[in-house]
Each structure stands twice: as C-alpha cells, then as structure tokens.
Image 1 (cartoon, rainbow, N blue to C red):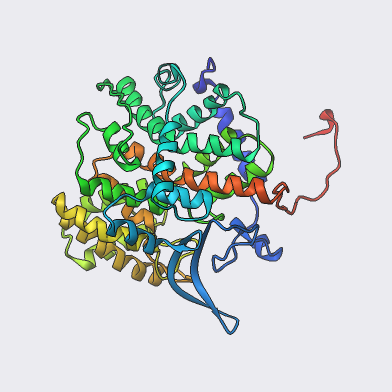
Image 2: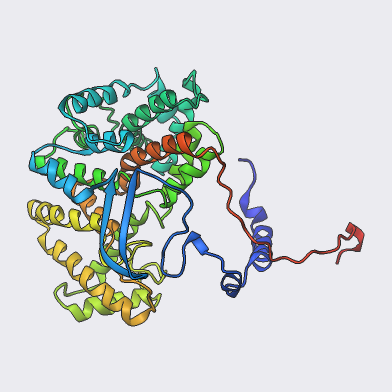
Length: 454
C-alpha cells in the first residue's frame, strides 16, 4: 500500500465523525418497531429462523405457558453431551472423532465405523504439493485466524470440483477441512513465530495413530511430548466446542452464506471471520487477559471482598479494558449453568493440580461465585448469570502451554465439525436464501444538484 496514512489521517477522522453522526440510530426505535436486536428478544430467546437435527441448546422449560430457567443442557443429535463425554472418558479413549461422526451422520459409530472414519479423516490430511511453502510460509500473519481463512480460500484453487454442491462432494471437502484445520493453524503459528519473532521453525507432520488432540500437541511442541491428561483435557475441550446449535454467530453465518449457493471454501472462510470476533470465539483470550489483570491488582486471592471490588470496578468501566464486562460470565442462551463449563471445570481442577496451579484454579472458582452477585447488584438482568465455557477454556489452554494466538484457532479446529454439518443440512433441506428484514427509518429526501448543496 503506497498511501501515507499520516497525510490523510485528519480527513479520515472528520469523515468518521460525520458517519457516526448520520448513521447512529436512536436506541428507543428498536422498542418502537419491535425489532429483535441480534435476532433475540429481551430475555435472550432467539428468533426461530430454521430447523435442525444437529444440536440443541436447552436453558429453560415451559410449564403452563411460563418459561422456567433450568440447568443448561447441550445435545448432539439427541445425545446429552455430558453423557457422551462420560462414555468415552469411562472407556479411556478420546472422543472428538466420534463426535465429528455423530454430527455429520446422525448416529454414534460402532467400532468398525469409527476405525474406518478415523482412517478416512487421515486420508484427507495431505496438503497440496508445496502448499506449506507457497501459502503458509509466505507473508505469515500475526493473526492466525486470518492465516487460517487465507489458507482455506487458497485451497479452493487446488480443488477441481470446488463449486460442485453435490452432497458427496461437499462431504469430501468437509472431511478435508476438518482433518486439515489443526495442521493449517499450527503451521501458521510456527511460521508467524519464525518470521515475526525470529524463533526456530518447526514443521511436524501429523501421525496416523494419534487422535486430533494428540496431533495438535505433537505438531505444536518441538519435542513432541505431552502427558495423557493434557491430551485428554484438550480432546474434551474439542468435543465441547464442536457445535452449539444453529443460532451461534459463526454457525448462523455458515447457514446464511450456504443458502446463497456459494462454495464450501468461501462459506467456511466467512465462518472463520465470525468466530474471530472477541464477542464469539475470541472471548477466551479476553478471559485470560482479564485474569492476568486481576492477579496483578488483587493482592489477596483469598479475600472475597477485594475480589468483588475488582469485579465491581469492571462493571463500572473502571478496570481492565473499561468495557463494563466480566468476561466469561453470562451467555446469550444459558442462565443457571453452561453444561460445557460444568464438564470442563472438573478436568480443569485435575489439570491445575498436575501443573501446580491449584491456587489459580481456586481464584477462578471464587470469581465464578462472586461475579453473578456483583452483576446482580449492578445490572437489571432478565435471566440468571453463570460462567460460560470461555471462562475455563482459556485457563485450560494456558495450563496446556498453548500460545494465546492459538486459543481461537483451537475453537475453530473443533467448530469446523459443526459448521460442515450445518452446511450439509442447509444444502439438503432449505433451498431458500436467508434474507432477514431491516426497517428503514430515514425519511425520503429530495435530490439536489451539486451546486445547490450547502
């Protein structure tokens, strides 16, 4: 780019002021016209935009026409995810590949089906010739989600049937992307560290006999080493992030873009862009940074009053990033509890003991208890507030010595399974382009020629 920004900075600032003045909408108009901002009502219930079999998020029961909050539940193809996790953990095996099969095909696999599917995934793990050198290692970005999106879009150029929307072809593309995401993200990380920070470059090929979680750690670490508990906890994190119904932002993006009839690579790149946002997949990084700030400013981690004062300061926009938010607390759907946070918390405690970070886990637990109290005293809420999955996932990744740059890409490594499942379901079932309505509130105006304008 040849433009010297400093030369046009003042003009940009003045134009942005005009844009903000003219484009701002009076918040009261949303109530006047009964607009469901964010496609959700005031209680957080989403506008029904479609049907799905893939996943269900349950946060309340209807009794005598009244909405009663309940402990949160997450179902994959009708199976309670907490039961699924207990099942494969009890059998001392990893479960992500099984969950991918479940999301894509609607049933849990038997032993042969699972073994065949694992082999099928690995068969789709090859990158095109020289792709690593020509795409990943050239002009590496410091933001790995952008690198991931670029790699996905570039794969279009290597696919002779990139625009074929037949289900067998889209399934082939889906299996390739699900299999390649860990490799693309980890390679992009190593490229970024090498070219931007002068660190050694490591490019390790994934191993056929390892699970997805194990291969992530194997490819990431120079020495390939990891503990069984590390791999188990990462596998569970992948399972819990694999899908969350059709209403989350990135999955809705997947379905909206799919409904236009575009190709798989463009669709998934759009979903990556959505997940990158700090209000969605980037939230776990915000939680981690917030706790770094808390640990620096709260002297006594056992003093509930001191911790609560810090949390109240966050709500008053006086602490951390002055956003007024306690990151990791609250969810658009869940009220009493997020089942993913509940599942993860038990394994977080075990991992914290292995890593010698039990005191830090105790601090997280205190904040989990005190934050809803602080929020209740400061804010008018229409449903309960509880810790969401991002509250603990960032701590998990930190204990796994995963770099913060990979926190959101790891989310993408899991959610690609859900994105592909919803894309296929949308292609099979809908047939209509998604096109919501927006009400225009600008009055009609008379056009004036250039010489007549003030």
